[in-house]
Amino acid sequence: MIELIPVRGLPEIRKDDDLAALVVELIELQPRDVLVLAQKAVSKAEGRVVRIDDYEASAKAIELAADERDPREIEVILREAKRIVRERGPLVIAETRHGFVCASAGVDHSNAPEHGTLVLLPVDPDASARAVRARIAELTGVEVGVIVTDSFGRPFRQGTTDVAIGVAGLPPMLDLRGTTDRIGYELRSSRVAIADEIAGAADLARGKAEGVPAVVVRGLQLSGDGSAKEIVIEHELDLFS
Image 1 (cartoon, rainbow, N blue to C red):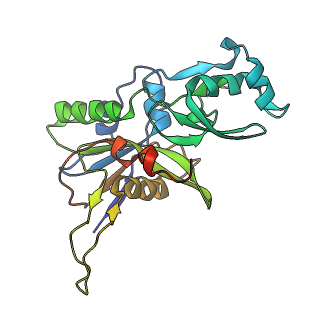
Image 2 (cartoon, rainbow, N blue to C red):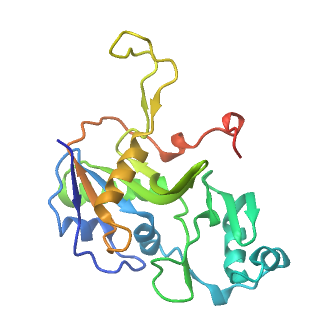
């Protein structure tokens, strides 16, 4: 049986907070648990919060804002973006330095610490996940998996779903190529983005507006390790961007 356990009671996360210590004070983790952390909590703990007033909008940012969005916010997005994939009015789809293709290069004002601030993606979400995992092991002696998640839109699909942007202590992909289905056909291309599936499941337990940035997923039998970078499709195979 798979359980989804919201970690309730966490305070508003601030720069230099010890996320691992805060979590283990509230829940007793078990071996092979997967701790799923919302990106906003990780970014806040790492100080990845900026003030809009500290930025001056460039001509490109003013053009993209189209009198519908604060051009200084667009400027932050442009600075976080490695590449602009699509743009329409104030909406910008960008590739981040991590290789993620997402709205606003992951820059967001929802759940920011205060008005006039923006939360950026962690510099290295995989490293963030590894650090939390190592700290939990140090504090408790328990080896768990850790996933850092964010909400992404998807081509050809309405709405958003949480996906893994940082992974430690579990395989991000399950490669089923070479195995057979129940009637004996060999699978030639099937790979399951298991870290994304865990991220989406955890989001069901967390809720978007309930202020619960951590969920423990219990009952999975996963072994191995890897990086969220493995889920990012290679440019030569990407038919959409």
